[in-house]
Structures are given as C-alpha cells and as structure tokens.
Length: 94
Image (tube, rainbow, N blue to C red; front, side, top):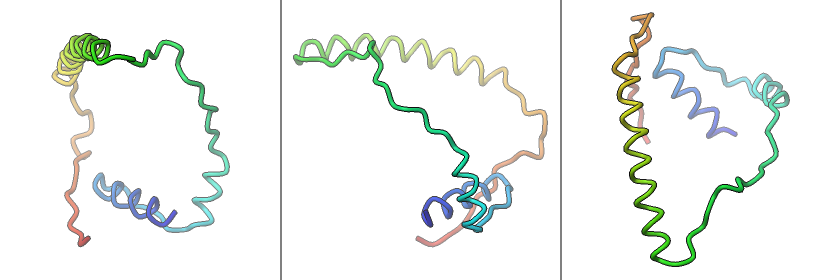
C-alpha cells in the first residue's frame, strides 16, 4: 500500500496534482471500488505450433500498424484546451 500511495503521489506531482497520504481516506475510497470478475475472452487463440505463432504474429503486426496510424491521426488533431496543464519533471533519489 505504501508503494502504491508513493507512486500515485509522485505521478500526481508530475501533473501538478496535490496528493494525500491519509491511509484512512484512501482505504475508504478503495472500499467503494468494484472490481469486475475476470472472464477470459473466447476470441483469444493460443498458438500450438511455431508456425501458428509466426502467422498470428504477422496478422497482429498489420493490425497494430493500422491502429498506430489511427492514433497518430487522432493525436495530430488533439489540442489542449487548458494550456496550464503541463507535465512538471520531478527529481528524486532511488
């Protein structure tokens, strides 16, 4: 829990969001979180042979290229409405 709180606060500081270390508040928020039950997708295919794996990899490679191009187009059109929303680099020691 300490690691998650520290990482969340660090990530928040990057975007200028003040964090919290109040464990009671954090735990009360977590009590309200509903995690859906995991159900594996029926469409996922696991390759049995190396040949099937190679073919699946080639298919996925083409799909990924198409998705990447769509994302690039969306990012090019995206404009921030609030120019004050900037990332602030944080310095810390490991």
